[in-house]
Amino acid sequence: MSLRDRQRRRVRDEIQRAAYALFARSGFEVVTTEQIATAAGVSPSTYFRHVRNKEDLLLEPVREGGSGIAGLLETRPGTEPADVALAGAILARSTSLAVEELEQWRAAFMTAPHLLERVALVPPDHRVRLVELVAHRMSRDPETDPTPGLLVHLMLAAAEFGLLRWLRAQDPAASLPVCMEAALAAVQDRRWRRAQA
Image (cartoon, rainbow, N blue to C red; front, side, top):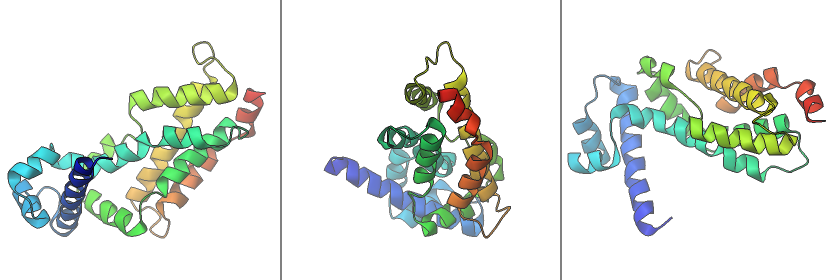
């Protein structure tokens, strides 16, 4: 990253931290963009150069997390079965944020439950890339064989289920990685490995 990109990232991070604290304390709907800008120590015009809307502040971490899965999948050992490699990449991404940051984000997110319906772990273009990577790992043609695409979609659905379970605190003692791992394990099956043979 260039110096300018790092500075932009730092300002964006400050805005996010301020927003999360305000959302958790006062509620998503009540907090204004002006309050967020003031708490972050930036002007409203600077705020709007970095943030389109309040929803993006809460949804961006999910989108960023999902976009990194393909890169992590590419670094997994080539000998790993596709389901193990994909699950490993998803789990690695779920542990990339500090626990304190995750808890602050969850507390903020829970003040905007209507956004739960908009949680999508991986955007469509990244899903296509994941299908390509999994198909390559399985030595399958994704155009003629639905197996790689089905595996990717099932694993991402499981990961989204784990994320939502953690967000909703259905198991308050469970961490995000624990919820993700349990959901992914539920769909992993030896049949995927047989399909690769």
